[in-house]
Picture (cartoon, rainbow, N blue to C red):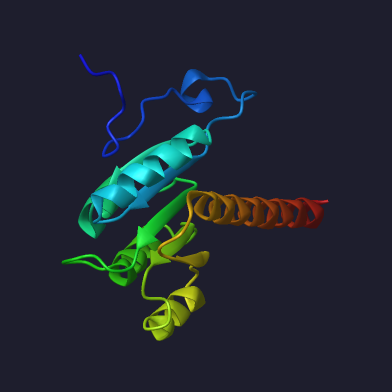
Length: 166
C-alpha cells in the first residue's frame, strides 16, 4: 500500500481551527494550478517540505471547483498563465469574483510576451508574478515574501480598525 501523498490532491491535515485549538498555528495552505505534471509534482514537494498544506490541480476549472468549496481556505494560489481551455487570466478573474482578497502569484514562461495581460492582472489585485523556469528556492522565497506582505498589510488594516474604534 502506498502511503505517499498524491501530488494531485489535498494533503490531509487537521487544522487547529477544526480541532478547536486557536493557540496553535496552522500550516500555510497553498493551491498550485498548472497543466504541467512535472511542475505540480515539483511544487508539491517544495511546499510540503517547507511545511505548507498543499493542493495541486491541473486546470482553471479544477482550481475554481476547489476554491468555490472553501473560498477563504487557501493562503496563496500559484497560478500558471498558459493553460488550455481556461487560462490563468480568466481563472484569476473568476477567483477574485469569488473572493476579492484571494492572494494569487502568477507563474509563467511568457513574461515579456504577456506583460500587458500581467499589468491588467496586477491592477486587479495580482500579488506578483514569477518567470518559468524558476528554481525551487526562488518560488518558495517569492511565496513567503508575498505571505509576509499580506500578513503585514492585513495586520495594518486590523490595527487601523482598532484605532478607529477607540
